[in-house]
Length: 365
Image (tube, rainbow, N blue to C red; front, side):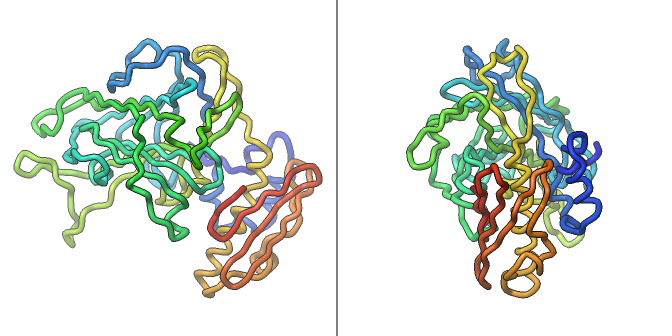
Protein backbone atom coordinates (compact mmCIF):
# COMPACT_ATOMS: atom_id res chain seq x y z
CA UNK A 1 0.00 0.00 0.00
CA UNK A 2 1.37 3.38 -0.98
CA UNK A 3 1.93 6.15 1.51
CA UNK A 4 -0.58 8.99 1.59
CA UNK A 5 0.65 12.30 2.91
CA UNK A 6 -1.48 15.15 4.21
CA UNK A 7 -0.47 16.96 1.06
CA UNK A 8 -1.94 14.20 -1.04
CA UNK A 9 -5.15 14.33 0.96
CA UNK A 10 -6.15 17.67 -0.50
CA UNK A 11 -4.39 17.34 -3.82
CA UNK A 12 -7.64 17.22 -5.75
CA UNK A 13 -9.04 20.32 -4.09
CA UNK A 14 -6.12 22.69 -3.74
CA UNK A 15 -2.69 22.94 -5.29
CA UNK A 16 -0.92 25.02 -2.66
CA UNK A 17 -0.22 22.35 -0.07
CA UNK A 18 1.30 19.83 -2.51
CA UNK A 19 3.42 22.65 -3.88
CA UNK A 20 4.50 23.53 -0.36
CA UNK A 21 5.63 19.98 0.27
CA UNK A 22 7.30 19.71 -3.11
CA UNK A 23 9.10 23.05 -3.19
CA UNK A 24 10.14 23.64 0.42
CA UNK A 25 12.19 21.65 2.87
CA UNK A 26 9.78 22.21 5.76
CA UNK A 27 8.81 18.56 6.16
CA UNK A 28 11.96 16.99 4.74
CA UNK A 29 13.17 14.07 6.84
CA UNK A 30 9.92 13.94 8.82
CA UNK A 31 7.60 12.58 6.14
CA UNK A 32 7.03 9.40 8.14
CA UNK A 33 5.33 11.50 10.83
CA UNK A 34 2.92 13.14 8.40
CA UNK A 35 1.29 10.19 6.67
CA UNK A 36 -2.50 10.30 6.67
CA UNK A 37 -3.96 8.41 9.65
CA UNK A 38 -6.72 5.87 9.11
CA UNK A 39 -10.34 6.84 9.82
CA UNK A 40 -13.47 4.93 10.81
CA UNK A 41 -17.07 6.12 11.04
CA UNK A 42 -18.82 4.05 13.71
CA UNK A 43 -22.56 3.44 13.50
CA UNK A 44 -25.04 3.37 16.37
CA UNK A 45 -26.62 0.16 17.63
CA UNK A 46 -29.84 -0.25 19.59
CA UNK A 47 -28.87 -3.83 20.43
CA UNK A 48 -25.74 -4.47 22.46
CA UNK A 49 -23.57 -7.44 21.50
CA UNK A 50 -23.05 -10.17 24.07
CA UNK A 51 -19.49 -9.65 25.28
CA UNK A 52 -18.12 -13.19 25.42
CA UNK A 53 -15.36 -13.08 22.83
CA UNK A 54 -17.47 -14.67 20.11
CA UNK A 55 -17.92 -12.02 17.45
CA UNK A 56 -20.49 -13.94 15.39
CA UNK A 57 -23.46 -12.15 17.01
CA UNK A 58 -26.00 -10.92 14.48
CA UNK A 59 -25.45 -7.35 15.65
CA UNK A 60 -21.81 -7.45 14.55
CA UNK A 61 -22.82 -8.26 10.98
CA UNK A 62 -23.98 -4.66 10.56
CA UNK A 63 -20.54 -3.20 11.35
CA UNK A 64 -17.76 -2.75 8.80
CA UNK A 65 -14.27 -4.17 9.19
CA UNK A 66 -11.23 -1.93 9.17
CA UNK A 67 -8.47 -2.71 6.72
CA UNK A 68 -5.82 -5.21 7.74
CA UNK A 69 -3.29 -4.05 10.30
CA UNK A 70 0.15 -2.93 9.14
CA UNK A 71 3.53 -2.61 10.80
CA UNK A 72 3.78 0.26 13.27
CA UNK A 73 6.33 1.94 10.98
CA UNK A 74 4.07 1.59 7.95
CA UNK A 75 5.56 0.72 4.60
CA UNK A 76 9.09 0.91 6.01
CA UNK A 77 8.60 -2.65 7.26
CA UNK A 78 7.14 -5.84 5.72
CA UNK A 79 3.44 -6.64 5.81
CA UNK A 80 2.45 -8.63 8.94
CA UNK A 81 2.43 -12.37 8.39
CA UNK A 82 -0.85 -12.79 10.32
CA UNK A 83 -3.99 -10.82 9.50
CA UNK A 84 -5.68 -8.57 12.07
CA UNK A 85 -8.82 -6.47 11.65
CA UNK A 86 -11.35 -4.67 13.83
CA UNK A 87 -14.95 -3.46 13.71
CA UNK A 88 -16.82 -1.11 16.04
CA UNK A 89 -20.30 -0.12 17.23
CA UNK A 90 -21.55 2.27 19.88
CA UNK A 91 -24.56 3.19 21.98
CA UNK A 92 -25.16 5.73 24.74
CA UNK A 93 -23.12 3.71 27.24
CA UNK A 94 -20.33 1.83 25.48
CA UNK A 95 -17.93 1.78 22.58
CA UNK A 96 -17.97 -1.82 21.33
CA UNK A 97 -14.88 -3.32 19.71
CA UNK A 98 -14.47 -6.68 17.98
CA UNK A 99 -11.00 -7.83 16.92
CA UNK A 100 -10.17 -10.82 14.74
CA UNK A 101 -6.58 -12.11 14.84
CA UNK A 102 -5.24 -14.97 12.75
CA UNK A 103 -2.65 -16.98 14.70
CA UNK A 104 -1.43 -20.53 14.23
CA UNK A 105 -0.09 -20.72 17.79
CA UNK A 106 -2.27 -19.04 20.39
CA UNK A 107 -0.56 -18.68 23.75
CA UNK A 108 -0.69 -16.58 26.91
CA UNK A 109 0.66 -17.04 30.43
CA UNK A 110 -0.13 -13.86 32.38
CA UNK A 111 -3.24 -14.22 34.54
CA UNK A 112 -3.38 -11.28 36.97
CA UNK A 113 -5.05 -7.92 36.39
CA UNK A 114 -2.56 -5.16 35.59
CA UNK A 115 0.35 -7.43 34.88
CA UNK A 116 2.25 -6.07 31.88
CA UNK A 117 0.18 -7.97 29.35
CA UNK A 118 2.28 -7.03 26.32
CA UNK A 119 4.93 -9.46 27.58
CA UNK A 120 2.47 -11.97 26.09
CA UNK A 121 0.98 -11.62 22.63
CA UNK A 122 -1.85 -9.16 23.12
CA UNK A 123 -4.41 -6.78 21.62
CA UNK A 124 -4.33 -3.13 22.65
CA UNK A 125 -6.62 -0.10 22.43
CA UNK A 126 -5.52 3.53 22.82
CA UNK A 127 -8.18 6.25 23.21
CA UNK A 128 -7.92 10.05 23.44
CA UNK A 129 -11.47 11.46 23.54
CA UNK A 130 -10.34 15.10 23.71
CA UNK A 131 -7.66 15.04 20.96
CA UNK A 132 -5.12 16.99 22.99
CA UNK A 133 -2.46 14.23 22.97
CA UNK A 134 -2.71 14.29 26.78
CA UNK A 135 -5.07 12.49 29.19
CA UNK A 136 -5.60 9.27 27.30
CA UNK A 137 -6.45 5.67 28.10
CA UNK A 138 -4.96 2.30 27.21
CA UNK A 139 -6.41 -1.21 27.36
CA UNK A 140 -4.46 -4.42 26.78
CA UNK A 141 -5.82 -7.98 26.74
CA UNK A 142 -4.24 -11.38 26.12
CA UNK A 143 -5.67 -14.74 25.07
CA UNK A 144 -6.37 -15.64 28.72
CA UNK A 145 -8.71 -12.63 28.92
CA UNK A 146 -6.29 -10.90 31.30
CA UNK A 147 -6.62 -7.10 31.22
CA UNK A 148 -4.04 -4.37 31.75
CA UNK A 149 -5.70 -0.94 31.83
CA UNK A 150 -4.04 2.38 32.49
CA UNK A 151 -4.43 6.15 32.27
CA UNK A 152 -1.69 8.44 31.02
CA UNK A 153 -1.78 12.14 31.98
CA UNK A 154 0.65 12.78 29.12
CA UNK A 155 2.89 10.67 26.87
CA UNK A 156 6.08 9.11 28.20
CA UNK A 157 8.13 11.44 25.96
CA UNK A 158 7.00 14.33 28.18
CA UNK A 159 8.42 12.75 31.32
CA UNK A 160 5.16 11.24 32.50
CA UNK A 161 4.46 7.87 34.00
CA UNK A 162 1.34 5.76 33.63
CA UNK A 163 -1.35 5.54 36.29
CA UNK A 164 -1.57 1.75 36.47
CA UNK A 165 -3.77 1.91 39.59
CA UNK A 166 -6.57 3.33 37.42
CA UNK A 167 -9.11 0.60 36.65
CA UNK A 168 -11.91 0.63 34.12
CA UNK A 169 -14.34 -1.03 36.50
CA UNK A 170 -17.31 -1.08 34.12
CA UNK A 171 -15.29 -2.65 31.29
CA UNK A 172 -16.74 -5.78 29.69
CA UNK A 173 -14.32 -8.10 27.91
CA UNK A 174 -14.19 -11.56 26.42
CA UNK A 175 -11.88 -13.79 24.36
CA UNK A 176 -12.64 -16.73 22.07
CA UNK A 177 -9.95 -19.09 20.78
CA UNK A 178 -10.28 -20.93 17.50
CA UNK A 179 -8.09 -23.89 18.37
CA UNK A 180 -6.22 -24.59 21.58
CA UNK A 181 -4.39 -22.45 24.11
CA UNK A 182 -0.74 -23.07 25.03
CA UNK A 183 -0.55 -26.32 23.04
CA UNK A 184 2.42 -26.31 20.63
CA UNK A 185 1.46 -29.74 19.24
CA UNK A 186 -1.26 -28.38 16.95
CA UNK A 187 -2.04 -25.46 14.68
CA UNK A 188 -4.72 -22.98 15.63
CA UNK A 189 -6.79 -20.62 13.50
CA UNK A 190 -6.60 -17.60 15.76
CA UNK A 191 -8.44 -15.71 18.47
CA UNK A 192 -11.03 -12.99 18.77
CA UNK A 193 -11.57 -10.25 21.34
CA UNK A 194 -14.68 -8.33 22.34
CA UNK A 195 -14.55 -5.18 24.42
CA UNK A 196 -17.28 -2.89 25.70
CA UNK A 197 -15.48 0.26 26.81
CA UNK A 198 -17.74 2.39 29.02
CA UNK A 199 -17.84 6.11 28.34
CA UNK A 200 -18.29 6.61 32.08
CA UNK A 201 -14.81 5.17 32.68
CA UNK A 202 -12.85 7.10 30.07
CA UNK A 203 -13.57 10.47 31.63
CA UNK A 204 -11.51 13.40 32.81
CA UNK A 205 -12.56 15.55 35.79
CA UNK A 206 -15.49 13.20 36.50
CA UNK A 207 -17.38 14.46 33.46
CA UNK A 208 -18.75 11.60 31.37
CA UNK A 209 -18.23 12.47 27.73
CA UNK A 210 -21.02 10.78 25.77
CA UNK A 211 -20.24 11.23 22.06
CA UNK A 212 -22.56 13.30 19.92
CA UNK A 213 -23.29 12.83 16.25
CA UNK A 214 -20.21 13.87 14.28
CA UNK A 215 -17.82 13.92 17.24
CA UNK A 216 -14.28 12.82 16.39
CA UNK A 217 -11.96 11.04 18.82
CA UNK A 218 -8.40 9.81 18.35
CA UNK A 219 -7.94 6.07 18.62
CA UNK A 220 -5.55 3.34 17.59
CA UNK A 221 -5.20 -0.41 17.94
CA UNK A 222 -2.04 -2.44 18.33
CA UNK A 223 -1.31 -6.16 18.23
CA UNK A 224 1.91 -7.27 19.92
CA UNK A 225 3.25 -10.50 18.42
CA UNK A 226 6.43 -12.14 19.72
CA UNK A 227 8.68 -14.53 17.81
CA UNK A 228 8.59 -17.85 19.67
CA UNK A 229 9.86 -21.41 19.64
CA UNK A 230 8.93 -24.49 21.65
CA UNK A 231 10.92 -25.59 24.69
CA UNK A 232 9.65 -28.26 27.07
CA UNK A 233 6.19 -28.18 25.50
CA UNK A 234 5.96 -24.45 26.20
CA UNK A 235 6.21 -21.38 24.01
CA UNK A 236 9.32 -19.30 24.74
CA UNK A 237 10.55 -16.13 23.07
CA UNK A 238 13.34 -16.48 20.56
CA UNK A 239 16.74 -14.96 21.32
CA UNK A 240 19.48 -13.57 19.12
CA UNK A 241 23.14 -14.61 19.01
CA UNK A 242 23.81 -12.43 22.06
CA UNK A 243 21.04 -14.20 24.01
CA UNK A 244 18.82 -11.12 23.94
CA UNK A 245 15.09 -11.58 23.39
CA UNK A 246 14.11 -10.70 19.84
CA UNK A 247 12.02 -7.53 19.67
CA UNK A 248 8.28 -7.92 19.36
CA UNK A 249 6.30 -7.20 16.22
CA UNK A 250 3.96 -4.23 16.56
CA UNK A 251 1.06 -4.43 14.12
CA UNK A 252 -1.36 -1.51 14.16
CA UNK A 253 -4.51 -0.21 12.54
CA UNK A 254 -3.06 3.22 11.74
CA UNK A 255 0.74 3.26 11.29
CA UNK A 256 2.56 5.54 13.72
CA UNK A 257 5.63 6.06 11.53
CA UNK A 258 7.80 5.38 14.59
CA UNK A 259 8.09 2.49 17.05
CA UNK A 260 6.04 4.25 19.70
CA UNK A 261 2.31 3.94 20.31
CA UNK A 262 2.50 6.85 22.73
CA UNK A 263 2.36 9.54 20.08
CA UNK A 264 -1.41 10.20 20.11
CA UNK A 265 -1.20 12.73 17.28
CA UNK A 266 -0.43 9.78 15.00
CA UNK A 267 -3.50 7.74 15.93
CA UNK A 268 -6.47 7.20 13.66
CA UNK A 269 -9.72 9.16 13.64
CA UNK A 270 -12.93 7.69 15.07
CA UNK A 271 -16.07 9.59 14.04
CA UNK A 272 -19.36 8.82 15.78
CA UNK A 273 -22.56 8.69 13.75
CA UNK A 274 -26.09 8.35 15.12
CA UNK A 275 -27.04 6.60 11.88
CA UNK A 276 -27.89 3.00 12.55
CA UNK A 277 -25.06 0.57 11.85
CA UNK A 278 -25.74 -1.23 8.60
CA UNK A 279 -27.31 1.85 6.99
CA UNK A 280 -25.45 4.47 4.98
CA UNK A 281 -22.91 6.25 7.16
CA UNK A 282 -21.40 9.65 6.38
CA UNK A 283 -18.01 9.85 4.72
CA UNK A 284 -15.17 10.96 6.96
CA UNK A 285 -13.82 14.40 6.10
CA UNK A 286 -10.67 15.57 7.82
CA UNK A 287 -11.45 18.81 9.71
CA UNK A 288 -9.60 21.93 8.62
CA UNK A 289 -8.19 22.25 12.13
CA UNK A 290 -6.36 18.95 11.66
CA UNK A 291 -4.58 20.40 8.64
CA UNK A 292 -3.58 23.42 10.72
CA UNK A 293 -2.32 21.18 13.50
CA UNK A 294 0.21 19.55 11.18
CA UNK A 295 2.26 22.75 11.21
CA UNK A 296 2.19 22.87 15.00
CA UNK A 297 3.43 19.30 15.11
CA UNK A 298 6.14 20.29 12.66
CA UNK A 299 7.26 22.96 15.13
CA UNK A 300 7.14 20.42 17.95
CA UNK A 301 9.21 17.79 16.14
CA UNK A 302 11.77 20.30 14.90
CA UNK A 303 12.12 21.84 18.35
CA UNK A 304 12.81 18.38 19.81
CA UNK A 305 15.43 17.78 17.13
CA UNK A 306 17.00 21.17 17.86
CA UNK A 307 17.11 20.54 21.62
CA UNK A 308 18.60 17.08 21.13
CA UNK A 309 21.36 18.63 19.04
CA UNK A 310 22.03 21.83 21.03
CA UNK A 311 20.64 21.20 24.51
CA UNK A 312 18.07 23.99 24.32
CA UNK A 313 15.04 25.06 22.30
CA UNK A 314 15.29 27.42 19.34
CA UNK A 315 14.11 30.98 19.90
CA UNK A 316 12.50 31.55 16.48
CA UNK A 317 10.79 29.78 13.59
CA UNK A 318 13.31 30.97 11.01
CA UNK A 319 16.06 29.06 12.78
CA UNK A 320 13.91 25.93 12.48
CA UNK A 321 13.34 26.53 8.78
CA UNK A 322 9.59 27.05 9.24
CA UNK A 323 7.77 29.98 7.56
CA UNK A 324 5.62 32.35 9.61
CA UNK A 325 2.83 32.34 7.01
CA UNK A 326 1.53 29.17 5.34
CA UNK A 327 -1.32 28.58 2.91
CA UNK A 328 -3.79 25.80 3.75
CA UNK A 329 -6.70 25.21 1.36
CA UNK A 330 -6.20 28.70 -0.02
CA UNK A 331 -6.32 30.40 3.37
CA UNK A 332 -3.38 32.27 4.81
CA UNK A 333 -2.41 30.99 8.24
CA UNK A 334 -0.05 32.74 10.62
CA UNK A 335 2.41 30.75 12.72
CA UNK A 336 4.01 32.28 15.77
CA UNK A 337 6.21 30.98 18.57
CA UNK A 338 7.30 32.14 21.99
CA UNK A 339 10.33 30.33 23.35
CA UNK A 340 13.01 30.23 26.00
CA UNK A 341 15.86 27.76 26.19
CA UNK A 342 13.68 25.45 28.29
CA UNK A 343 10.15 25.73 26.97
CA UNK A 344 8.13 26.97 24.03
CA UNK A 345 4.60 27.61 22.83
CA UNK A 346 3.51 27.88 19.19
CA UNK A 347 0.20 28.95 17.67
CA UNK A 348 -1.50 28.89 14.29
CA UNK A 349 -4.58 30.77 13.14
CA UNK A 350 -6.31 32.11 10.05
CA UNK A 351 -8.59 35.12 9.68
CA UNK A 352 -11.72 33.01 10.23
CA UNK A 353 -10.49 30.30 12.60
CA UNK A 354 -9.71 30.08 16.27
CA UNK A 355 -6.12 29.99 17.44
CA UNK A 356 -4.67 26.53 18.08
CA UNK A 357 -1.72 26.17 20.43
CA UNK A 358 0.94 23.55 21.17
CA UNK A 359 3.56 23.60 23.91
CA UNK A 360 6.86 21.83 24.51
CA UNK A 361 5.07 18.88 26.16
CA UNK A 362 2.96 18.28 23.06
CA UNK A 363 -0.26 19.54 24.65
CA UNK A 364 -2.35 20.83 21.76
CA UNK A 365 -5.71 22.57 21.95
